[in-house]
Length: 344
Image (cartoon, rainbow, N blue to C red):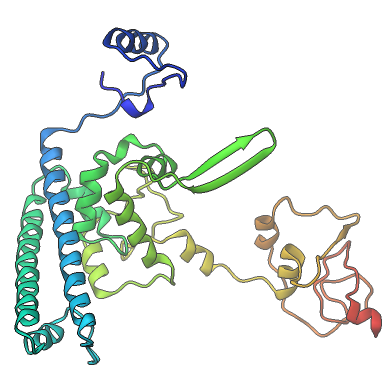
């Protein structure tokens, strides 16, 4: 059994540490099932992880080398005024033609440019090796499925496979998030509950890949040509329950996996009056007195009912979906008038 050393309990007042005391403590914890076993990766997984982390180290070296060159130009008040982005082919050509005047500064500029070019060559070579290791490996299918998601391509998919290993050992998404340290910290005592920042435990590389990929979902879902090519030929199977179809999040025909956000956008939006009833107004809190009719069990159940289209203003007093002011009013629900209506 291989246990996680960071989860072995140790009394705070214990200031004496010997091999005999450690062995006795480990034996007592093993007898009461107090040790947390960890999964031991295979040699092939360790080799892939080494290559992925080597590429990550080269990426950090390239970022620092570019930062040094940028600060050198900033000290000499040299700014890139073109419309093209930095570190493109046009930007690289502009750097080659620079002349800082002083010999020492020019030699430093050429040295920084040579270091950046060497790091770029190393990075491209590692990326090519990583792409060659995937075909025929145990992660070929997992990498292909991960590439179907927006924001995840070959490097991110291989990095997640190398850091996480076997995804099937996690029964739900919350366990995976806890493994990579994306769950919030908590300090709860009695009736007081306080949630803090994320725990940041586990692999920092896997956490960074997931966070960067999540930024691609902040806008409405859209499939470009690159994503369609990655999804082409993949089986239409839900990732939440392997081997079983989930019609709620999978569509047949184009083989695309729809997210919960896209499914929610396809539902008909309720009327503005329903929003005021469920969420309240911005300046005053909306209170409702429920009469003889029983309210829905949840806002989702309330929104699932089909609401009729807005009709002409009604002069009925509380019997209809809208009163003469055009405000939403279900049967049996009394909404107090606003201060504006009282003044009228």
